[in-house]
Amino acid sequence: MHAVDSRPNPAEAPQAPPPRHVARARNRSQRDSRVAWLLSLPTLVILIAMLAYPLYRMIVLSFQNMRLKELFSGATPPWAGFDQYTKALTDGVFWGVVGRTAAFTVVSVTLSVLLGLGIALLMRRVHARVRIFMMIAMMFVWALPQLVAAQSFRWLTDSDFGVLNYVLTQLGFDYATHSWFVNPWEGWAVITTLVVWAGIPFLAISLSAGLTQVPKELLEAATVDGASPWQALRNITLPILKPLLMIVTTLSVIWNFGLFTQNWALRDGHPEPVYQTLATFSYTQAFGRSNYSYGSAIAVITVLLMLGVMVFYIRQMFKIGEVD
Amino acid sequence: MTNLSTIPDAGAVAKPTASAGAPRESRRVNPLGGVAHLSLFLWALVTVGPLIWVFLASFKTNEEIFLDEPFGLPQSWALNNFGDAWSEAHIGQYFLNSVFVVLISTAGTMLLGSMAAYVLARYRFAGNRFIYYLFVSGLAFPTFMALAPLFGIAQAMNLLDSYFGLILIYIAYSLSFTVFFLEAFFRTLPHEIEEAATVDGAGHMRRFFQVMMPMAKSGLVSIAIFNIVGQWNQYLLPVVVMQSESKYVLTQGIANISVSAGYQAEWGQLFAALTLSILPMILVYAIFQRQIQAGLTSGAVK
Image 1 (spheres, rainbow over the protein chains, first blue to last red):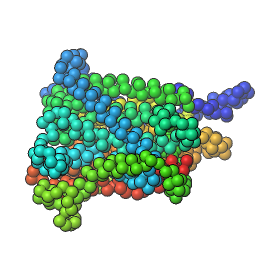
Image 2: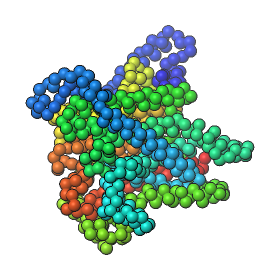
Image 3: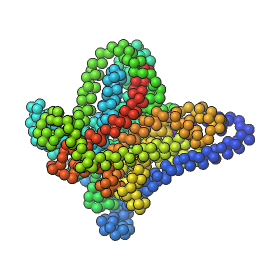
Image 4: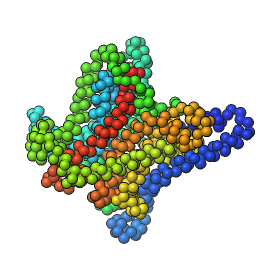
């Protein structure tokens, strides 16, 4: 990963270059450098304006104390130092939200990766036509906007008219007007089901593409040598799949840790305290209560926590790069 | 890194047809086959069940949705709900807005992202890794955090209620993953062809557009689908930028139907709008079907 080009370009880096060549190569590499900057410049400008600058603004805001008054008057909010951070870090409610978000992330990512891997493995065993049908079905779920999926689930679990209660009642359980969000465990089960359901297609599609890279000969040889399917999976398939598995797992962690749309929509835009995640909590503090600086501080802490995951991610990529 | 690129690779390698794979599949008699089929069938049911429910409900009246059997067929297959949603709830307008924005922003993302990924993967220059990590760290940046500052920027640059502004923002928020993915992909492409083109006197632009882009086609298609899906699904970003109702995108329109009217709402319209929102993805699938299927069957033949 460090070197841009793992293979040295023979034209630019000959083993024992005559001086004239060196000069030409240097000339070319200067020109290359200009072209490189030119080609990535538009991208950089957009990224800095739309991503880096908001991040910077948010960090500044988190050290101030901005309320409605400053928002309307446009006056510079008073400097507050680390007050917002102290407030968050000493607040039991905040830590409750952190714990809840982390627990949800662990459970939902574990479930979706395991199920996604399971489905990807099963898809290798069935007829090509079945596989294509499965892919189409999963493409649709993957293509469903989060908001749409959340709205559908809100109706599926509606206490009066929901399909879920209807089906359970038909099966002989007393769920006629059962509300799924009174008990937080049940509510979170619904949210987790939604997130896992919507997350599996991406994982299963990526992983089944990754599985095509596992050499059949290797698996067949293992079977001939008397390896059980489980041993073949553990010792051949999973090691080959590991880099891809790491990447999709980390992506899932990042996505699920930032859970917003699903619990927001399922709770109708007003998540109760027990259904708050870091994302909705930050948003509610900033915009619901006009506590913009406090919301920003929470968001900054969220990013720092995410960056922790990213460091792990990039390290993993370094390792993979070395194998290359 | 190589393994991430297996997703597009699979599509590139696979020229063989499904018929070549089929005999081999059937030759392999597998006791687990039955279990696999049954589990997949159950998963398929869970996957498409809610979708079928939404689709059926989009043809029903409020009474049918609430009082009849959920999976019962509607009394008529008339397109009333779709028509009402299209014109009364302005879903038609929002739908077209979404199509317009996503088309341009995906094209922009692909152009800018592939250029940046190409130079990051193939050119040595000072600051290369710095730019790369800048992009990658964008992956950890949660959208909701940027909402307030983004509003400020959009206001300052006069980009509120402007499609151009929304497109720029979509591009910015898609670039991280695009560059990250394509950089890995460009790295795996052979250097020899590019070198040959250089020897033949092709300039940077020509090398990029006429040599690299065609070679990277399967990778570009994969990431383009990813971006189309992602941008079509956006809800928070347009909420910030598109404030006047005539400029809403589809997700805003759907939220509008369900939030504004409560129990008075025409729920059939809501479900019709939900169904409409899935349609373009069917189209995308139809267009890229061959690439996607090629990626699938390659495994069977290998």
